[in-house]
Amino acid sequence: MSLEEIQFGGMLTMALLTLTLAFLLPVRTAMGNIFSRARWLMAGATSLLFIQFLLQYTLHFRQMGVTQGVFINLLFFVPCAWQLSLGLLYLQRNGKVLRHEWLGGIGAYVIMVVLLITVGTIKGHSLLEDTPEMRMAEYMAACIYSIIQLYYSWLNAHGFRHLRRALDNYYDHDKSDMLRWMERSVLLLSLSALFVPPTLFATGPLLLAYSVFIFLSMYYCIFSFICYGVSSAPQQVMEAETEQEDEEEEKEEKQEEKVKTEKTANPEELGHTKEAVDRWIAAKRHMRNGITIQTAANEMHVSRHQLTVWLKTTEQELFNPWLTHLRIEEAKLMLKDHHEWSNDHIAEACGFSSRSYFHTVFRKQTGLTPSQYAEQASRGSV
View 1 (cartoon, one colour):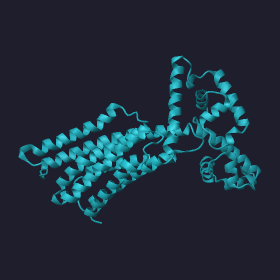
View 2 (tube, rainbow, N blue to C red):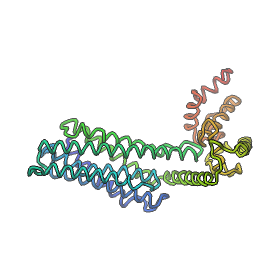
View 3 (cartoon, helix red, strand yellow):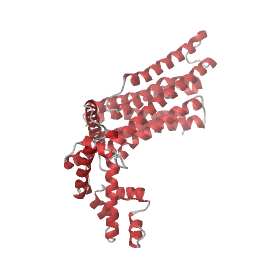
View 4 (cartoon, helix red, strand yellow):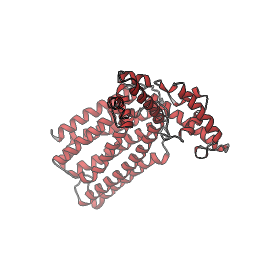
């Protein structure tokens, strides 16, 4: 595969992704304007990448010289990567991106462009003339890009952890798979940024390999975003985020009223919650699939804040790990007492969403598969 073929393929692919983002995705989603703005940021990124591929393919900048190709790539790829990172951050933060986080990428790009133009035109040189000064300016610009991209990757990684914690503290089973594409996209964008300085003036196979990597990384990020937008994942994530925000607001109100938080929680309140939890467990209410922390709190007749504070006193600390632990303990008893029961039956009876999920979490917590545990239980080894 030649570089020209990659450029042509990239041009067509980015054009199709831009059209999909702009016209084919649902106008309204559970996230409303938040998803819409993230979509237009992504569409802006694919448009810039389309223009970059188009210029490289039609004007043959790489054939003119390495410097010319690098100059065009920096001008278009840097804002493209910035918009992709910002689109992810916009989703993760529920639209709450701080002003300095917006301006950081813009400021870095302006500095980079001013640097390239200033150095490129000194001594009467042309912007696309291959000079030692221009090469140094392009290398400095690439380093600026790497730094700002790693900064956005750090913000996105932090946002991903926040979202995963919100899901773990709301739903009754692991839903982090729906966010896995975000984690991978952040990693790919980080690697792209790290590889820019050492490969900036590369030619031959190294340039080809890096071009393929960039193309596939961008395609994965955008295509995953499109799949995420048309799925039910945004609604589930937003529900968990909303509940967490409500919990944080309630916690702030409690603090303002000088009510003790989880670190110095009221023993009487903790005791009341513990009794409610014990009654709920004794009634086997935890053995149903599809429970949320709000559902459990309502059934226990305690507030979600009270349940969250009590959960902090447990080994698991969060709702999903705590509930999963309870279900695994129930599954162990069933495997001991009913060797003839299938894993499908036990998974359903204990409230697990699927047999495969039951198998995964059981092995993670016990170090054994359900079948191995049942076999050892029959011999009295466990």
